[in-house]
Every structure is written in structure tokens, then in C-alpha cells.
Picture 1 (cartoon, one colour):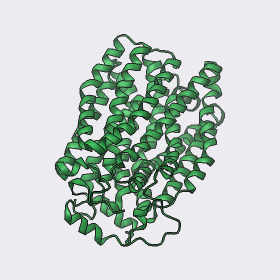
Picture 2 (cartoon, rainbow, N blue to C red):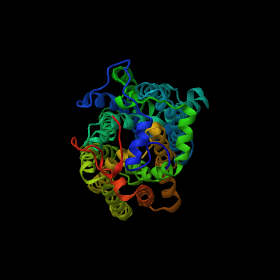
Picture 3 (cartoon, one colour):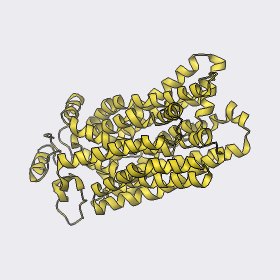
Picture 4 (cartoon, one colour):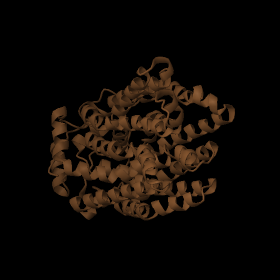
Amino acid sequence: MREPGCRRGRGAARMDAATHAPTRTPRSPPIAASSPFRPALLVVSGNLLEMYDFTVYGYYAGAIAKAYFPAADTYASTMATFAVFGAGFLMRPLGAVALGAAIDRYGRRGGLLLTLSLMAAGTLAIALTPPYARIGLAAPLIVLLGRLVQGLSAGVELGGVSVYLAEIAPAGARGFLVSWQSASQQVAVIAAAAIGLGLGERLSAAEMADFGWRIPFLIGCALIPFLLFARRSLTETPEFLARRERPSAAAIVALVGRNGVVVGLGALMTTLTTVAFYTITAYTPTYGTSVLHLSSRAAFFVTLCVGASNFVLLPVAGAASDRLGRLPLLLAAAGAALLTSYPALRWLVEAPSFGRLLAVELWLSALYALYNGAMVVHLAEVMPPSARTSGFSLAYSLAAGVFGGFTPAVCTWLIHATGDKAIPGLWLAGAAAAGLAGALGLARLGGRQSLRSRQVRPSDPRPRGGKEWRR
């Protein structure tokens, strides 16, 4: 880590000072650092569409399988659907590098508008494509293309939002403010589950399989104009406007490459977040109905409760990381997930019930929230300022592309191959081990005090641990 913005101590301040200059007159008024909550609300609103669409795809995997991937074997059809779900994640690293470099060079605001537009195009493709029975092979190909476009967008959406929030956050509240990026996604989980419950009450199983599953996607499409309007009112972050030098996209990519160890450890650290999230949200309805043979109503209600739990706990965890430091929360949550994931699912499958599914999912959601509330802001903090979006997005995208996005498919395959209905708990435990390795690796690389990343109090001239943030 020899790049500007990655060094520690007073030397880091001098290096950063060489790449910053007094704020230029912006084209639009900068956001006041004292009141970041309105722009925070506007910027996280775009996350709703991304996570809503991803969640709905997982919820209605069975109906999508019948519409676009018909097969005599239900297992093969479901696997094809989840494989296409995962294929979108393979595009995330490309989006992280290409779009992330553009955002680091040209600005946060324009990049957030671009990613939302791409996500909207992919959502429309999935919502409006006729079924396989009507247009044949073109149907799954269009759906696959839509997922790939969404993956390209998602590769930098989360990073762009997290970096934007980190750069407008007031001293001492960065963890709390950045946590709303993840908390906002839970609104999408809750909305998707509530819509699923409502449709289940009004439509028969045959109607849901025929056309009902499209309704949630169409609702997502209806949100697109409002979300685009909200993001258009954003202004650029003062920290970005204050930069005198704007490295070329090639220079930003090279900088990320030279910090490959940091990106790799960040990807390991992120693995637990992505695997846990898709386990407790997108995969739960399929797991509850197809594996545990519970009612779809029960599975959707559990998912709704998980979303509500995450929405409350994520900001609490983010605020706790501001006071206690990032590393203690990361280690505690990852350690608990490593030790309890498989036993919890083993207890569930021994006597499947709504109550046990709810208890296990709420426990896993609490561990996810505790970990993610510290992880997202920490990942933004360890990246070089001039390549912050690219580095963050690449680390997150690698974890999501290799592990998180394929979680529903991997869990389906593992259960089929082993006959062990609790085996997804081992997959989650493996992700927890990766998260521990990443967090400890960054601690060793950066020094224990630096990795605690305690936040600045308004009266402090610089953060504890020697990390300098320009505003």
C-alpha cells in the first residue's frame, strides 16, 4: 500500500495534501456537511430498485423457471434460473473497474445516474419479455442479457452510493450514515415480501405461475421515473470537488492494481456480507417452500421480518462501529456466524416449522447486520481516495460474483448432492471464515490501530489511527 491516500500517520496527511487543493467553484452548490441527511435519503433511494429486483427474482425463481427455462426436471429448471441469477454477478467486476474508474474521474453524481439507468433497463427486460412458449430460445437469452446489464450496473452501484455517503458524512457519524446504504435495501426486501404476501392472498398458484409473478417486476418499473428524478437533484460531494488532480481512468485502474492486496483482502472480508444477505433474503422463500415444505405465506412472512430486523439493526451497528471501532464488530459477528450457522440450520431441519424458520433467520439476520454495519464503511475507508469507488466496487463485486450471487444455486446443488438440508449452513460458515481472514489480514496489513478506524469527533484535528480524510 504505497499509493496516495493509503499511507498512515502524518506522512499520509502530507501525501494527501499534495493531491488536494482549495475547493474550486462547483457547477452546483455543494452539499452542506452539517446537513447530509436529505442527500443521503435521495442517494440511497436508487438502491431500492437494485435490491428490489434482485429480491423479487429470488422470490419467484420457481415461476421464472417455468416461464423461461422449462424442463422436465424441476431441479434442472430451478438450477438454470439460479444460474442466470448468478450470471449477473459475473459482470460486477467489469462494472466495478470500468464504471468505477469513470466515477472516480468524472464525479459521483453522474455515475449514480448512469448505474440507475442501466439497472432500470435490465428490470424492464425481465418484466416484459414473453415466455419461452411464445418466442422460444429468445426468451431466456433476453432475460440473461437483462441480468448481465443489471450486473454491470450493480458492480458499481453499491460502491458509488457508499463512497458518496462516506464523503458527505459528518465527523463521528460516518459508520451510521453509510449503514443506511444497506438499510435502504431492506425496504426493498420488506416491500417485495409484502407484495408477495398480498399476491398470494388474491391469486391462485396457477395464476401466479402464469402472470402474477410479473406484477412485482412491473411495480419496480413504475418506480424508475421517481428514482431517476430523485437522483437528478443530487449535487457533487465537496471532497470530490476539492480535488485539483483528476487521474485518468487508466491511471485509476493502475492504482487499484497496485493495491491488489488491499482489494483482495477486502473481497474476502465482503464474502460474509454477500453470502449472508442472499441466504436470508433471496434464497429463503425457495428454501422454505421447496426444501422445508412450508407454505409460501410462511416463507414470505419470515423474509418480511428479516427485512424489518435488518432495517433496524444496520444503523445501530453502524453507529456502534463509530464508537467501538470497526474491527471488534467484524470479528465478533464473523466468529458467531462461523460457530452457529450450521448448528442453527441443523436444528431447523430436524423439525421444520414456521417458528423455527423465523428464529433461525432472525438470528442470522442479526449477525449479518452487526457485520455489515461495520464492514461497508470500513471497506470505503481502506481504499485510496483517488480510486475509492473503483477499489471498493471491485472488492465487493469479486465477493458477490464468486460467492454471494451464486449462493441460491450453490445451496440448491449442495442439498441435491448431499441430501443434507442443513448444508447451506456450512456454506455460510465458510463465508464467515473468509470474512474473518479478510478482516484480520487487513488488520495485519494496516496496523491494529489503523484498522479500528475510530471516527473523528468535531473537535479532533484528525482521526485516531492516523487516517486522514479531506473535506
